[in-house]
Amino acid sequence: DARVTQTPRHKVTEMGQEVTMRCQPILGHNTVFWYRQTMMQGLELLAYFRNRAPLDDSGMPKDRFSAEMPDATLATLKIQPSEPRDSAVYFCASGESTDTQYFGPGTRLTVL
Amino acid sequence: QQQVKQSPQSLIVQKGGISIINCAYENTAFDYFPWYQQFPGKGPALLIAIRPDVSEKKEGRFTISFNKSAKQFSLHIMDSQPGDSATYFCAAIVGFQKLVFGTGTRLLVSP
Image (tube, rainbow over all chains, first blue to last red; front, side, top):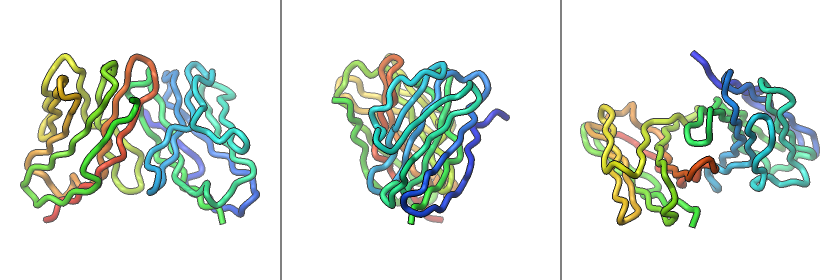
């Protein structure tokens, strides 16, 4: 049963610290997405990649967020420095295209 | 024009009743309309989807009704069960662009 995996599942950190979230997409999927979910804003697309190349990162605060795909089996989302307003659940999703997306279990981030 | 408007924000339905969630869009270029279901502590999961060349699609107790002229689509859950209690998101997409999600509907099915 192929699934998107995300680590860590929970992260508590202090303001100003660097946070790295990792995602392993489903093998064979060439499109990877990063979303952020909060009660206030709902589900927001931060960035997405196709064949490891960034296609759209317009939803991501550029000054502190960065997303990369070092290889086809790993996507990373980094926040440096983190702020309390970054507290949210971060989801990675993958797919063979953009229409059908398979979401991971999420990383719940709390920035104190 | 890229927005998808979803209503209601929350919904309480008795067990056995029909749950109805509505979505409206402006962009007539959208050509795929999926619904995602999210349980607490989990990621959203694709539930059912429709393309605009059909007016209805049914999978088990879940039905999408699509009204192209009104630019609206809705999810109907027949014989709603407590296990259906979740947040439901409608979405829309055109071509290989990004999915546009609605704001979500929190459904509670009371026993």
